[in-house]
Image (cartoon, rainbow, N blue to C red):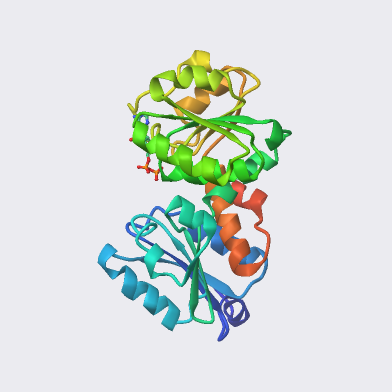
Length: 289
Ligand code: ATR
């Protein structure tokens, strides 16, 4: 049975409230990760999933401010829609066109996108230097925006996008060149992705291909070599076919769950100024994928 003192530790008159807005929200791993991190640091806080219908987003945000909620994660379908509702938006979130974290201070809302910082975190643990790393990016959508901006900010000098739709790739390319004039940024049509992959050190899949059984194969086995670092941002299954193939060819692989943990770590830092217990969170969530 739970004792009174345990309950007093779990919740108090000054408990700070955090949460996530999404719809549906039942499969989110964020409540588990963030609750674990709050408890790890003995912080007096609670993290709650809020199933917010698309039409209710403005009311839900106003409600969060009125209730004194301190921080929110924002997921599908609200990541883009929340932008115009916020008082301030970070440079990254503006560039990506999506917010996944909101900090609420003194009634003011500040929107962030922690995907890029989260994406970099597992790479920072590898013996590689961004300044010496060229990257081949599959896709040119919202996720590719987060990944490419983070890589160029970290000092990656050379980046090639592979995309089916020329307009999208062209737009992202010119947006990146404008912000990072010192870097070499190009794009190639998707049919040249295998050649592009062979020529770069880091390969990142930013598309959702690999999530569903029967999805097309993005790259042939021959695209991979042992020097490669291959990162798939798809996190279900834990090891996508792309990662399995890369591993068989001797490459270093990074599963998408690492980016999910990383984006949560950065949100937690923004809200609490505490570091995420990443190793423990890994042990917690890897078996759940
Ligand atoms: P997100 O915000 O998750 O990045 P998005 O903005 O819709 O989603 O972008 C999806 C990306 O995956 C796009 O670059 C898309 O390519 P197109 O611009 O040509 O549509 C890419 N994508 C989706 N399915 C793909 C497939 N079967 N093969 C190659 N690229 C694919």
